[in-house]
Length: 231
Image 1 (tube, rainbow, N blue to C red):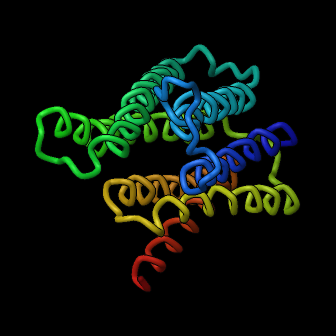
Image 2 (cartoon, rainbow, N blue to C red; image 1 turned 45 degrees about the vertical axis):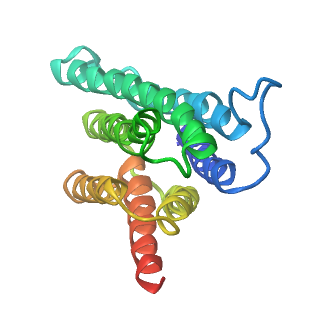
């Protein structure tokens, strides 16, 4: 449990850093004199996702342990989902961050030229579709792995409280990204993961990731919808 707590704390910290990186003014400077990217774009494309994916992978290894189910067909299928999800996430970050920078710098006013229409489509639509496909696959794979490699010992009250405390930060990160902008496909993705994690918590019992995801996603979802209603 200690390793799971540490790794989920990394994910929670990344969620907050992503929001600070996106919404704050501190990372708007250019990385190099040729102005190919801003720090916000570079951080979102290479630094923060890499930390998150490494933590996801280590959570996966902790959950699997040395269980005999490691060689089963279900484990292979979930591993394939996890790998494909990572690839799609990487492709989406590479597409989104570059076109987002070009959109903000060169196409904020020009929405009619062929070049800007392509940039805007890649920034606002295509990269989002690829991102959400990868995001869902990675997180669903981890939830399925938790179901496949269920922890035998009972989760203590202290561990549950630590999991929920960690989840507060992920929920805050969701709120920062959904509560202050126009809600689109991201709302349905968060709702899907909230429902799935709740269902697994109900059917398979109190497992670390079920508690963490259920609390984080429902908190972020309800808070974001509430804030949108009040706007």
